[in-house]
Every structure is written in C-alpha cells, then in structure tokens.
Image (cartoon, rainbow, N blue to C red; front, side, top):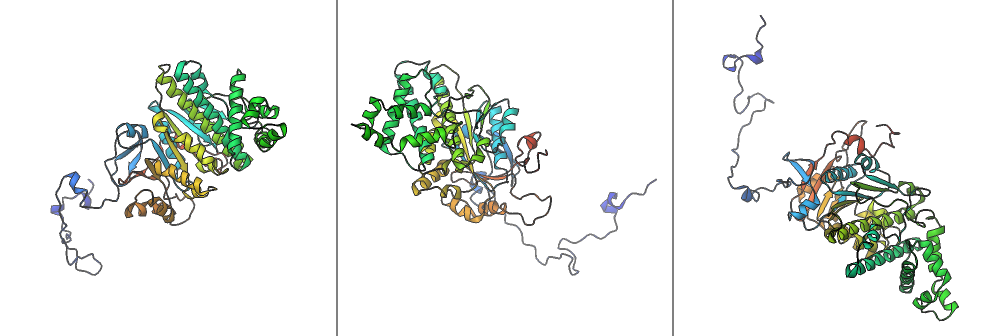
Length: 487
C-alpha cells in the first residue's frame, strides 16, 4: 500500500503550522501590520459605471462577425458596420483603421471580410497592392481580376454594370442614370489627367473633355476609350471647336495644346497597356467577393499605382451603384457590400486634387448599402498630401468614419487622434503599450500583434485581442514572401 501524500491528507489532521491571517512575524515572511477593509459599493449596472473610471467599455453588442475577446472582461466582441447602422449603434457604415506595419491590420480586415461574406454581404477588395487578399478571395469562391501590362485591363470610361442597368431602363430614371454615367466618366478622366500632369485640369479643358465624352457616347455603339478621346481632340470637329470657344484653327490648337499631350501620356507613357483599351474582365455582380489585384503595377511607380487604384475604386463603386439601381427597379435582389481600401495613401499622393475624386466616390456609402474600411499606417500619411486643401479633405475620411480601429500606435500619433476622437488616459496607455516590444530576441512576438481598440463616437473603446483559427493562419499570412514562400 502506498503512503498517502502530505497534499492528500485531511488538513484538519495535519500537524504542520498554519500561517496567521497577517502572515509570519519573521523578516521577509510577508507580514502585514495593517489590513485596510475594502470599500463596498452597491448600485445598478447603469449607475455603477459612474463610480469607477473603467479602462474600457464592456457589454459589446453580439451583432456581426466575432473579432476576438475583450481584453479585460473576456467576452466575445463582434463587429459589423451594416448591422450596427441598422440597429442605431453608429450613424454611418464607414470604418478607418490605423496601426503600425506588421501588427495585423490586414488580418482584421480579412476576418471581417470572411465573416460578412458568410452572412451574405458581397466583398470588394479595391486594389490589392501586394497582393494580400488573393488567396482568401479564391478560397471564398470569389473573382480575382489581375490588372497589369499584358494582363487584365480596366477602361476608365467603361460604364460597367451601370451600362447594363441602363439598357434595361427607360423614361426619367434612364435619363438620370445616363447623366450619372456621364459624370463618372468625366470625373475619372479628369482625375487621370490630373495624375499624369501632376497638376489640375483647367475649366476650359474640362468643358472640352465633357463635350468629347458626349460626342463619343452618341457616336459609338461600344464603350468609349481614352484613345478615342485623344483621336477626337486631334481631329477637332466643329462640336469640339465650339466647346473650346475657338474661332480659328490656331485658337483651337492653343486651347488643346496641353490637353492632347496629357491624354497621349495615358496611352503612350508609363500607363500604356493598362488603361488604354476595353475592359477585359468585368466585375461579376454575383460573385461572393471580388479582388482587383494591382500588385503587378506596383513596381512601375506610385503614378501607375495611383492610377490603378483610382480606376479600381471608380469601377467598383459603379458596380455597387448598379446593384442599387437594379434593386430599386425590381430587376435584381438587394445587395449589400463591404469594400476594403488598403494602402489608402498610395492613391492620394499622386497629384494635387486626387483626394476630391476619392471623396466624391466614398461620401454616399450609407445610401448605397455599402460598408467601407480604409486602412493606412498613420495620420502622417494623410498629412503628406500635396496641398492643405487635400490634407483637410483627407482628414475628413478619418473624422467621418463612425468606427475607428486603432492598432499599435506611438504617443505622438495618439495626440493627433485625440483631436478627432476622445481617448481616455487608460486607453492611450493601452494602445501605446502595444507599439514597441520591451526586448528583441528571436521568436519574440510583437506586443501589438492582433490587438485593436474599437472606438465609436465618444463611447469608451473596446480593446480586442484576436487569435487566428483553422485555415486563417495560412490565408491571412502576409509574410510568406519574406520567409521565401514557406507556410
């Protein structure tokens, strides 16, 4: 028979001394000379929150995609901007995410995208520059459009699904949609001209381009292209000369003296082979998710990347608008969308005035039934825009977003954020503590990896810790290229 261990004996039969409540009197034995009684409060949960300055809010709504667990209370935190808007938790479905590189910004975006697609929302990745989202979109059974020289092309003047919707409509509604298509074509053409010129298009030039778009729309039985606009201006028909207010051939040539080379750059310069022909792969409205992969143009410089992102945004938002129009006409079921706009700064830095185009595209997301997630590293990315006017409008993206997601950020960045949305002292301390590791050694994990503070208005934030499960580690991996392709 084995002897019963000391730990298994009945404590009442043990002869070993038991420490008194204040500890032993010996030095270093933990004796406390005084034990202060704790203060006890009793109140309802509504009243009690005012008696103690909680570090962060709790009671997160169980609406949406499970993002992770609350870092203080352990409860599951869910997020879905569309459901939060429907239930009155937020005023718009816009989200803006900030955080240092490598802390898992895209992982949160992918978790949210995966969950919302599972709920029936259509996902749109509006310009994947690395590409980070392609494996996930393919796993979800979605569509991947790869833009680049010798690959898929996007025609900036393509009406896309809006044109297909127009063909099924008549009367005043068709007229309104036709004018909307015209405005979109002209707006994107102006943005691209601004980009390659690195300066704004003048008012007379805008009038000339608008008339050219109108003429081509009436003449052609297909979608017009940028080379069509260039050829029309070089031809100089009477309608164009009238729009240019040119009485003589010399006057006309002076009016288009800068505009023609600008359009030629879109066709013959560094952008050749990408935006100068018909769209090769239209966006599939019925796909559960769509990613426009522009990683193959990244090496060509910021100008081409900005052009690719602007065209992608315009084409994708046109798709969303087409879905809304078809639903209003009873021609298709209602659809909801989530748009991911990663590396936001790359599309805005190309030239002065580009932020106007992005602002016009994104301002009406609530009416479209579309949620958007803009992602960048720092507000410094927006402060680096060419003009103060552009910087002010870009700050509006962050200010208007009802849901702000903060990853690991240094104190100076939090100072800027505090001017827009209130951060309590404990919230600032928590987010800044995620910003840098205490020590560097192989195998260490960045303290901010997978940690986010979700802020909505002036409410206390929800600190969330996310852990990858199942195939997420494989599908969300953004460091595979650094490791030489290892899983």
